[in-house]
Length: 278
Image (cartoon, rainbow, N blue to C red; front, side, top):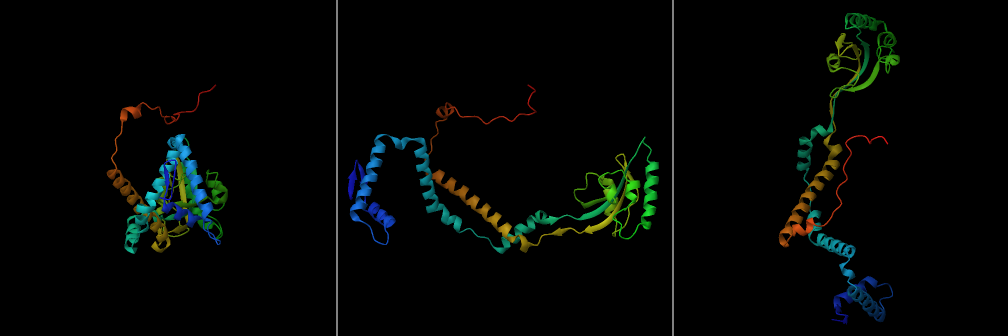
């Protein structure tokens, strides 16, 4: 022991640690070093007489420092050893291949007419007429070209040839009924036109403009993402096991009745509807 300050001891290790921390190019002043150690211990000893060590915030800070030191000593080396083989990454890719799938898509043009008075014959006749006129469109026409102006009531597309853009064939399109979209799935070539179909109070005629096959992002392009996620998962498992290991080493007694008597702010309730009018 080097010194005793109000019951607190300054050990050789304290001196050596402080000397290393304060050392500079000119070395350490021995007198000032000991004076600083004594002064710091004096402050700490007096703080204890005021019972400041029992302050909840101080206890929290002290606890976090201890936890940090425990993690650095026992847990971090285990986490640092976590690694993955190429086989594990490939297996994860195969298991979750759907994550990296780009569904088939078709760029479509649509003519859409509402059926009035429950009579679909007039709508079918108009769409059949439009289908026959497709062959008269200029090569550079987009989708149904100017036919969309005369044969479609879908305002968002009737002035651009009925072009609705790329449609995800897995999800469909909000303006195209599923049964109508099914008529487009079987179109084999760009430019092909479906037969007219009636569904959900509307008549539809669809034209294939382009098609994109189902695609999968290559493993090489997502290896880094998979590695990062799997390592995080492995580390999370190790951390949970470490916490359980420490819990089993330390006796724990919970006085539930005493705890239940402490008021704790409850979670705010989420309103189920709009606020009432003032």
